[in-house]
Image 1 (cartoon, rainbow over the protein chains, first blue to last red):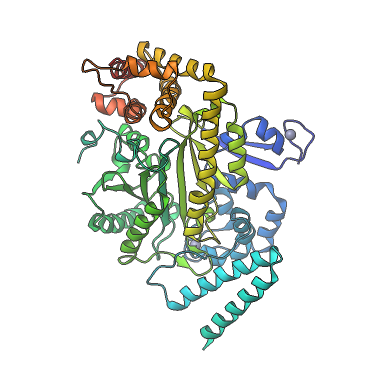
Image 2 (image 1 turned 30 degrees about the vertical axis):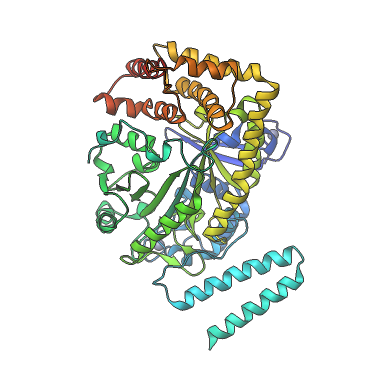
Length: 169
Length: 371
Ligand SMILES: [Zn+2]
Ligand SMILES: [Zn+2]
């Protein structure tokens, strides 16, 4: 898609603004966005941004279609179509039901990350805590590989294997 | 507890104290949580929302969070009260003007708020003056632990705390730092800051303004990534890297003004003072703009020991009959907050049209700055 302002560059920034219920979509390139001060002005709710990401990317559309657009959550009746309109999910269960379709979007929103490695509720089973620890190590391992620090990567891999073995025993 | 019990003063976190308070106004940490076994909020009926509200209200009101707690039923509070709570950073605009049964528990002298039925079932926050993210997190984490003893949160091994919007999953943490950057603005370097923040994956918002513009040179920086990184790592990035760098930029800009553009600096400060002391009608936007310049002058005097003709002039003008000055960062912060539209009206006791607000605002500022 072409930038609406300079009509030259590829539009990489897609904004959806809702003013008094009227939906207005803007597609611009990085340079024009900076010129227009859109970086500051675009502080619309993040879910607006998400829904515009969703609606402007054909690859995501195909992804949604391929993974079963008609699928509805048995708990809340939510569909992906609804998510695309509202940019929020219907219930916690939706993360599992639509995980395949949501994954690209989650990665996009979280700098490529897809595994939790923070706090775990103290009431959660011990296995959950362990799994989250492993996720954290896995993430460090990915970083190490990216930086070509293979010594560290090997060390982390051993640690992960150790934890996995303990888990299975 | 009535709003007028505290509407005459600023929040304690806004009194101008705290680490690095010359640039960092405040630190806030918010956690998003949802109850297991319930739908996310916007898929709930009002009946279900009321159930969730009751559960969480009872839990929060029973917690011991410092000073006494009080509850505000947001859905049936008058619009002016809701605006007032937004102006004090106690609740979000989304919470204030959302739909359906919802409420807020405020405790410990406004350092804590629990918003029930905002976008998620629960959003709890701690706000402190200056750069104090670690201490904010320590407290909010403890409160989160206490809540978690009484309710089951929606949590999954892969995505952590499950939230209505996928942008908040994982830790559900939103770390925000409010900054005052008048010198970067005056020297024309603010865009560099905005771009750098964007490159680091942060969200930048203007504050106090009615729209999205940064009124009074206040900016809020927040993290956007909440998944695949621990709470402590996010906080460390802010405390050890991002904020120290910005403080350095702003300080360098202040020195540049002082050493190379002292006429520009003095001009802005003197003009701000002259207008603020003489205006009889002043809009919220204009007041914020001018107070920001005044705040810069007072800040440079208090924190850097700077003396220029304009800065010395400020103090000479603000001497009372006892020969003591009432000019300080906390005086100016008071003016910032108490002249916001909802504060003016709550303290006046009734609604005012914009012209009367502008007149009352000008009067408060004049009487404060005329010794
Ligand atoms: Zn362009
Ligand atoms: Zn569902």
